Amino acid sequence: MNDVQERPLSRGQTVVLSAAALPMVAFGGMGAWGTYSNITSVFHRSATALGVVAAGEGATLVLALVLVGLTMLGQSAPAAVRAGLWTLPAVASLTGAAVAETVTEAVVFAVTPIAMCVSAEGMGLLARRIVVYRTGVDAEAQRRNATVMQRLAYHRARAANHPDEEARANSELKSWKLAKKVGAGDALLGAHLVDVQRERMTAGADAALAGMFALPAAALAVDAPEQPEPPAVEGLPVDGVTDPVTEVDTQVTPVFETVPAEPVTPVTPPVTPPVTLDEIAAVAGVPTPQPGEPLSDEQLVVVLRHLRYSDDPPLSYRQAVSAFREGGFVGGEQRVRKAWGSLMSHEETEA
Image (tube, rainbow, N blue to C red; front, side, top):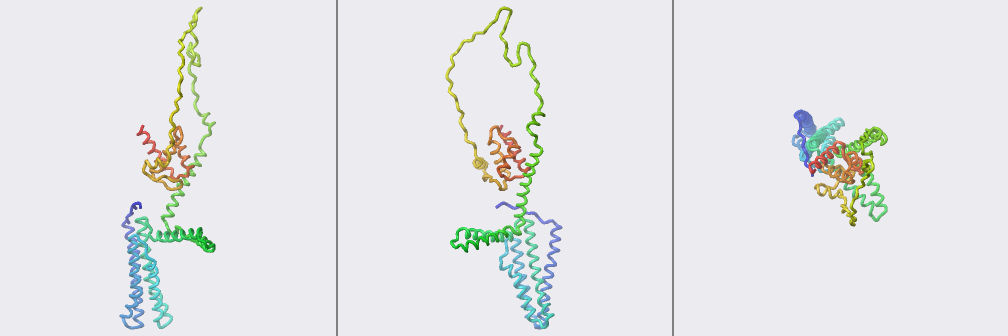
């Protein structure tokens, strides 16, 4: 698991969050005091009122503290804790409505315990958002996604291999319903998907601009500067062949000794098998890069090295980037340029 760089809260954020938490605690306490007063007005015994408050608002407060503590530790809350935050205030509301003497009192007695429920949920949500902001990890969203993925894997296997045709059909329908819930509420997953799509859009825009601004071969030939013809030297024709030496009535023809040619054995250079991407990745000590998956900086250098030397002569930057995109690899333009610069620097160092 990668280390997460935590972001500290600024002083202003700490002040605002503390100011937001204080009313939650205050109104939760006021709700408990209201329930105590309501029960006391009916039974005229403080012990009975305290028992009702302890069973309703007190137990809700305990569950709220458990929820906040687990959230601050980066852990998800059990389902029993989340259910208790709503069940216990509901029981207190029903108790208040049952002991009320009039309809008006029943409504007031039933509404009062809801303050503690809202306060507990608000404190838990605030603590969860603080943890997500500082660590980038949403334990509750991960728990939900893990549950959905486990059920989805079960129903996909059941839809494919169950002997009962009706069971396979039911699992097929449930699989599609569960597929709608994958990643729901996970802000980090959404951010990662946006990054992947941003890189693909950047690659598409780069390819489109390259196609728009690329000059045709005919235009490149016209724009190329003309090479001057070599000057003619007396006694030396343009083709570089010297005429035999000639005087007035004498022509000297050189005589060369003929040496019999020896048989020459043709030498075939050994064929070196091309280095695969897996081998380059193994030497670099990184996992083999896969098309369509986000790559690290080291994996980008491995892919570009493999593409550059896949042909003879080695590919240029534009050719390597074109092969990079055609191969389905994912990487932003800035990161690819940086990786290419690192590759060129390494080549210069080796040279």
